Amino acid sequence: MGPERTDALPAAPSPAGLRLHGLSVDGVNQCVHCGLCLSACPTFSLLGTEMDSPRGRIVLIKSLAEGRIDLTDSAVEHLSLCLDCRACETVCPAGVPYGRLIEAARAEIERQRPGGPVRRSVRWLNFGLLLTSPRALALVAAALRLYQVTRLQRLVRASGLLRILPGTLAAWEALLPPLPPAADRAPLPEQIPAAGARRARVALLTGCVQQAVFGAHNRATASVLAKNGYEVVIPRGQGCCGALHAHGGDRARAGALARQTIATFEQAGAEAVVVNTSGCGAHMKGYWHLLADDPAWAARARAFSLSVRDISEQLAREPLRGPLHPVPLTATYHDPCHVVHGQRIRGEPRKLLAQIPGLELVELREADWCCGSAGIYNLTQPEMAGRLLERKTRHVLETGAEAVVTANPGCILQLAQGLRERGAGVRVLHIVEVLNRAYGG
Image (tube, rainbow, N blue to C red; front, side, top):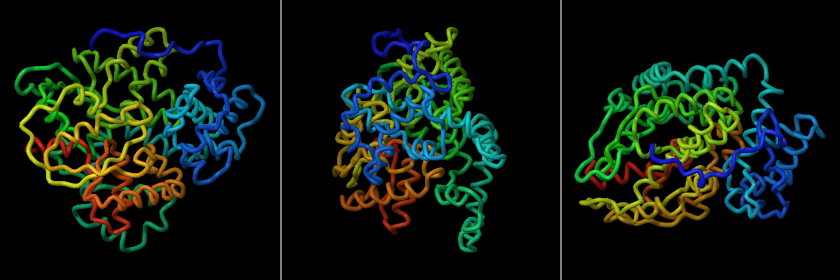
């Protein structure tokens, strides 16, 4: 995966520092309480309460780690309302690693307040079974496809049955996209040769939900990479990277999946690991910190993290290879949080879209503002997610664009739902779909 650049990542956390759930939260002491994060925080912007700002949550996390407060209902509520969008990190002059702090807090919440039998069973079903088993996920995807093509979905929605479903099941159902046919869910070939002069050999993460629901995006990604001179390898045995587990406080499974992912991709002999889902990419770039306390894996995780690249980051290293066909489309671009804030990638997607003939890119107001998806936030905090979605869709419609382009499956589902509810005919596209169309795909 290329030489390790040890200077490109911060030093590993000290095992003797301030910790919560066994995880370092020393970063809380970097906060100087300047308040520059307040205007960047979506929940503070909507609620206006100090404890729903990054600064306020940092105080909570530090107090919990020092044992000065208990994990009360109020503390859980304020910490759970955080989107983990990391917009505060972008504007923070002190470099507070807020994303790692909130994940440590979520892990502590799960340790102390795991909930009743129903909640624990639902978490096991999702985090312990479906996301960790490609076969189980494939079976669920096939069943949901049948649910849709037999028009059972239309009948269920018309019957009002969804209104009486427990928990967040109705929210899950509302977000369901059209499930692709089996051909789009089938595995990609293990190796796809480069077209023309070979630039490099890269490995592609096909993911868990991404492969089951957005397999066409993976095919488009591999095709565009090949058209640009990259030999693409699809390592067999890969699966979930553990991002949703880490965001949800399941650190043990997140660590196990990280080790499995690293071991699988090390066998690929690739110079880079390319990812087309922003949450996965940001999480995998953070494996070095996740496994910093594991002597057997720390160095391997560090080298792996340095090899991970977002698809736009990889393609923007050089101009796109031609010929590119015109794509007559007026589009706007929504920055997924874990691309723009988690990976600090802002200009590359726009640079790629600007090279496509016939495509007019209209700038989106608050383009880097969270849409409310945020992993599974739109399922666990539907009221706040809905408020953020309404704000985002309003800005999208103001542009007059025919399509909104983004780079994360969660954002695609969330934006599509919001635009559909408004009766808007605006399409939501992954950036690789647009690029693939420019290559005749």
